[in-house]
Length: 305
Image 1: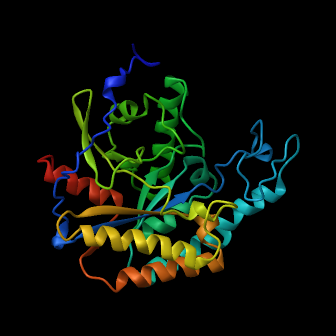
Image 2: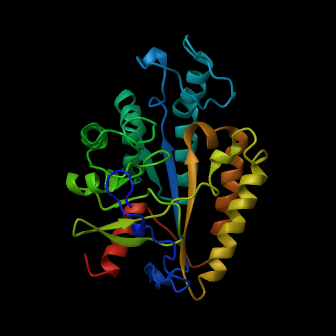
């Protein structure tokens, strides 16, 4: 039996490192690598006013507008560019944290500063697809063109091509192979299954998978998703940090913290991020790393750099 696309079920590895993870030997002997990921999606959402056939189906109001422009939804996304971006850049600068800005190509095509400004401050610019959309079931030719257009747009905006890729929701069964065929990607983050990177072989070529996380993520500020007060976000993420730092005494791991300009950029939520960074800054043995730096380190650890 095989799945659509010819992928046999036996390729699914549920054991992973089977309780014996490799020692990552993080730089400086760090006990924990902390990866801050800023998802840049503003301008890539579905909108009738942008020529799409529908409006975005995940507005913060929870009320979907059909058959007419959704000015409320657009204004909500606009906040991430008009206010959130600048507030977040300043806070990261204050703590000396370099992050990965995971950018949708169409968002950057509309507002190049979304990539240019973070790049100018030393942050990584990675790819988050062309649109804010899943690639599951996407036609292979369309996906190949989508990857190429995203790379070209991000490169034009900030002078550097993306080395990482992360698909909203589900990647397709072809995504990872197409990224390798494109030729310039070091890693993807289309996995949520571990606290350490891993090296995979894709058609005989080595590729790093850097798992991402939906729980240590400001997306849980969405109505009904668990975070309401800034202390909710700071407390939850701090608990994850504390646990992994303790494990790191013998088995160092990696912690992903997911942010969105229009979400964390709201004043009260920014206080939650500030509280989290204050907490982390009080501890030794932490490596704040861009994802491309983690991928390069992992490749080096495996004799590939």
